[in-house]
Image 1 (cartoon, rainbow, N blue to C red):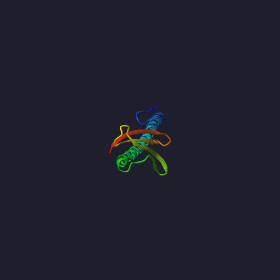
Image 2 (tube, rainbow, N blue to C red):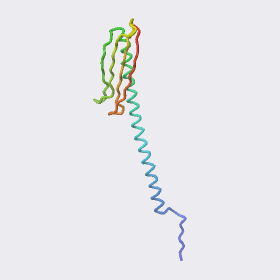
Image 3 (tube, rainbow, N blue to C red):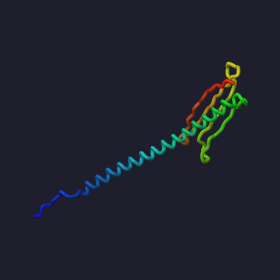
Image 4 (cartoon, helix red, strand yellow):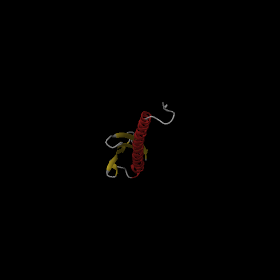
Length: 126
């Protein structure tokens, strides 16, 4: 009678289980990579929106005293897609004098289709 030696190699069941576990791990890595990509894209977009609002507020601080800035609206588009909208109002402060009150509302679409708004109030002494 010939004795079977099972010390060498793997059974087909062991190989199938190993392949299944490897596939589950790779699927998790791919899903994690996709989530990371979406988060990084949203972060870059949020950074652009914040810089857009900051630049407008800086211009309003200068224009409020020099030219008497008027209320207005501007849009930030990327590839034809609306990314953010800034709306602002400039008015004399309640205390009177040479102080102007600025109200800037920035509305962002991060991610596209969802709206997040920020309101910034500032005063400029002229």
